[in-house]
Length: 100
Image 1: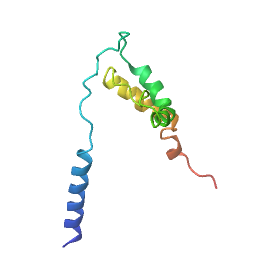
Image 2: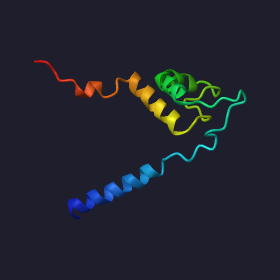
Image 3: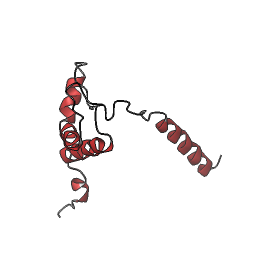
Image 4: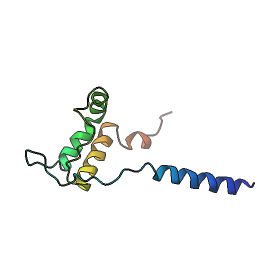
C-alpha cells in the first residue's frame, strides 16, 4: 500500500475517533441556579483560572465539578478558556526567543 493511502486512512480513523468523543449539548445553558444566577463571562474566567485546583478536588468528591453547567453559553466558555490561558501563560512562552 502506498504511504499516501496509509496516511489518508490513518487521518480518517483519527478524525472519526476524535469526533466520537465530542460532548453533547448543554441542556442547562441559560437555566438559572436556585438562587436565580447564571454563570457568565467573568465567572468563566475565574473558573478557568482555578481549574487545576478544582480538578484535583473533583477527583475526591462529587460535590465539586470542573465546569459550571448553568452558564450563559458562549461567553462563559470564552471566559473559561481565557482564564485557563491566563493561568498557563497563553502563547507567551512560545514566542520567546532563547538568548545566546
